[in-house]
Length: 536
Image 1 (cartoon, rainbow, N blue to C red):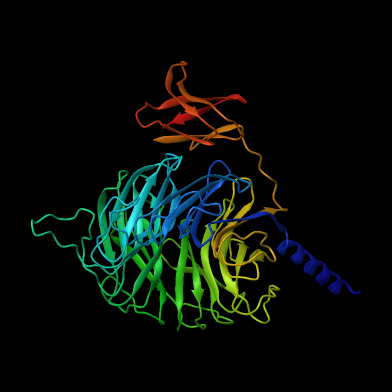
Image 2 (cartoon, rainbow, N blue to C red):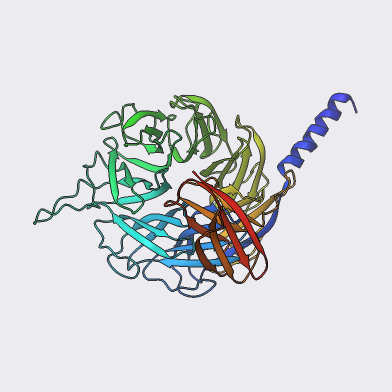
């Protein structure tokens, strides 16, 4: 064997090792006897995670509450091993689709989705049109604090929510509604739509304060169909919006279309005014589903494409649709792009930037006769797809997971202990990577370990965030049955105390306290520990 052949062999073996360095630690199915659909999941500070979607099942399987209507919001809080801590169901008499969940700075949660329900069940406000935005604020234990129904007379679909730095929320979705008309008595609906539609569907952005009251809303679109899929607040307190459009130059769309649909990205200032926009696409179908601001101040955007190497796209798709990821700078100019092919029909659903600047990419792919990642399913069956990328888009590792049935991955993220969570929906029976099945369609979660990363050990107690401005959360890193959590100032004066019963996350409101250093003491039947927290 000559030197060249030897080094090629070593490189090949190393590549295989890197691509297979992730093992399944555990996998679980969650659901009732009928159908559940997962749309979002988030890592929590206590090393666990929360699942969010909708359910049609009654009180059966491992579902503890009966449905109120056709589909209800359904969330599950899990620990780091995937063991359920609690679950909650919210719904009215119609179809309620929970699309997005975020952890709020008080340790609670904000739920965002779409509802057709009138006043019934958990729905406290009358429907306004065909479909409305429905937002629910929960505390750290999943108890409702408030809810809002927002919409016009048409179709309003909410897909993305984020908490803003001022404690409020930004909502991102699509709308066909015109401006809400006042009643016969001249009463204006303060939760209605303030601007007319530009076309078939438009981007619709709504800014709420911390209590769910509307501060402003913006309708942004062209003459045809524009669908907003993702929204985030940016480092300069503005907002980045991403979705897809088939509108020509019209309305707010200042650039021509390239294909049947294109990526359409807009940067807004903190008041919702457009600062810049970019239409990015090839000659056919390019659909953006996910984006995030990167550490360098730019953005990474991704979706699926079947376009050739035309217009903005530098590389043709290989078969059906492929993942298409584009890195843009702070003003929307393309820095690099990558196309990834896995199966006949590849759909990217999730993008996350890790602390080290690498990226996690999640989605799903339909199998094909000669798949390059070794799938043996019959054609037409979806599998989870997971990628980890370098800062320039080169692949660090890639993995596929599935059963003999249909799996749709919606979220991929790194957990605090250094592992990875893959969360989505499965219709498959027990087979291949899937060891349990409950109903026709279940939430399906996989936890991966990484052989190349050192496992991070949990702190006994910590405060997150720290320093804090309004809320901090005491995070307990062990199991217990009961105890008390108490906030002291440095003189030892007790400010606030609360009884606890196994909670891993305990919120403390610091908003009325002066700046300084405080101590949180957690005394349980297992241990007594404390942590200092700084109030800015």
